[in-house]
Structures are given as C-alpha cells and as structure tokens.
Image (cartoon, rainbow, N blue to C red; front, side, top):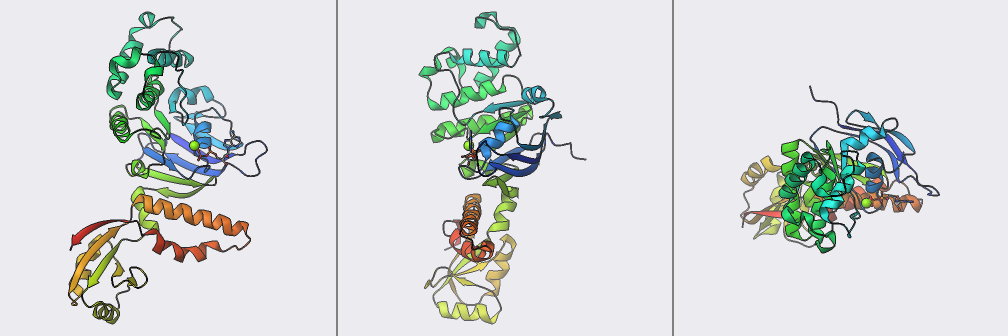
Length: 353
Ligand SMILES: Nc1ncnc2c1ncn2[C@@H]1O[C@H](COP(=O)(O)OP(=O)(O)O)[C@@H](O)[C@H]1O
Ligand SMILES: [Mg+2]
C-alpha cells in the first residue's frame, strides 16, 4: 500500500485582484512523500503563484491544500513548519552575515528564542548549521557578510536557511537561475543527496529542462492549467515518437521497398533523400532486418523532454491564440503541424554510420 500523499492540491484557484483571468485555474495534483516533483511552464504560467499558496505566503481564491496532514485553510502554522522554500527572487539581507540570516530565519520560525550572538545559540542550532554549511560547501564562509558572496554562494545559503527547521517538503522556485554550470551542478549534487538521506520531498520549478529529467514526475502548467502530468518519459513519449532515420544510395528503391512492405515512412525534410520510420527501441532491429535495400546510414532519434515540453507549450499557446481569434478547433490543426517541426532539434544517437 502506498503512503498517503504529502502534498494534496484539490481544485486550487487563484485570481489576483483586478485580474481578468485566473492565475491558477482549477489545478489538482498529489505528491508522494520523498518524491521529486517538478512544476514546469512558461513565464506567467502560475508556478510562483502555486508555490506561494502552498507555502502560505499567498491566500488562494478557492480549493483546498493539505501538506503533511495540515490543512492550509485551518492550520497554516502546521503547513509552515512542514515546508521550506527558496524563493525565485533572492531574499537575503546583504548587510548581515550568512549565519545571521539563518539565525533570523530560525528565530522567526520559532525554533529558538532570540539570542543576540551566535555563541549564545543552543548547540543543536550550531550543529545543524555546521552540517548544512558543510554539505553545500559553504564551510567557514558562513560567518562572512552576504555582501561578499557570489550568486552561487547566495543560492546555497538560501538552501541552508530553508532547511534549518528540518522541513519535510522543500520548495525550490527556479533555484539555479543565474548560476554558472559548476555551481548549478554542485547545488544539484547536494539537493539529490539530501533528498535520499533526509527523505525530503523536492518540489521544483525550473527553466532548465535537464534538471526536470531527474524528477519522478513533472507537471506542466500553461495559463494556470495543467496541460501534462506524468513521468518525464511518459510525457515525452505521449507527445513525440522515436524514429529511425534511414539513408540509402538508391533512395527511390528504399521508398519502393518500404511501400511494398507496408512500412509507413515520411521524408526527413521536404526534398530530403532520407526517410523517417517511427520505431520504438525494440522495433529497430526487426525493422532493419526486414529491409533488403542497402542502407548507407541509420540513426535512431530520441526526442528529449525539452523537445516534448516545447511542443506542448507551443501547441497550447497556438491553441490560445486561435481561440482568441475565434477560430476554435485549434487542436486539430496543430496536431499535424507539431509532430514534424518539434523533432527538428531532437537529440540523436548514432547507431550505424
Ligand atoms: N502580485 C500579482 N498581482 C497580480 N497579478 C499577478 C501577481 N503575481 C503574478 N501575477 C500574474 O499571475 C500570472 C502567473 O504568474 P506567476 O505565478 O508569477 O507565473 P510563473 O511563476 O509561472 O512565471 C501571470 O499572469 C502574472 O502576471
Ligand atoms: Mg515564477
């Protein structure tokens, strides 16, 4: 039996004052304890609004949210004790030291009574701080002023701060935006390790699709609505087909043979000699065996999550534009347009050359 979800979002709605549409429009999903869940979507999709509601900094217009057994409507303090958050916009006090930023937060959370200096803080606080600073690699820098910190160090400090009260769920709103690749990798090494050791649930929003590839499930929002929800593999597969790209010295003979054998194909591009045949992993070998025309090149093309995501968002936005223009039935027009164009940038893997 699977454990009850740690996050339960049911028919969540948020309409900002004076807005003419819902920023979050009837969204429902569950997250399992220890899951790595990623909320994706273009700017303005409603990600930050959703996270703000789930972390009690914004009141919903409708719907219910339960986190770690605490109902948001009746027990916001309970929710707050179960969650940690790193905000999209940095929220550190640059004039304080890193440790002072963390201490202030711990005191605001009611973890410890206020103490005017680090030395007067309880041992438990000192140990937790040292442990966290160590894992993210801040070490002794923890007593330096935040003003002297690089962007990467500030992000790591925010993570330390968000974890000081042992939250069961960590919300990360675009935590790696603006970080250089090395800092981004370091932060992720730490986050994934922490997820395993402390069984922390990770709730991430990001614009880097590669970060979401590691998620157990992704949820794609567009204009406040869920347009896809599932494992990265399932979402990708449901949108884009894997295919094999075949080239032959005699392209006409290859086409004739495929037609004669009832194997569906499309031209790789208008006027291209190469053809595409849809094929899942296990279909490649039988397909190649069944072809007698000598092949000069074979390449399997695997769409990535990024390809699928872009196709999905493009389709949704096109649908919205056509709806606005009063055309309706947009889904049909675009179902065709999408498959082709979306695969252009697909990552490809050489099999035989
Ligand atoms: N404080 C606010 N007041 C009014 N509208 C807002 C406010 N914050 C966000 N919005 C609007 O709500 C929608 C969702 O925004 P947001 O949740 O920030 O999206 P995301 O984080 O996915 O980029 C957008 O249309 C945005 O303009
Ligand atoms: Mg945002």
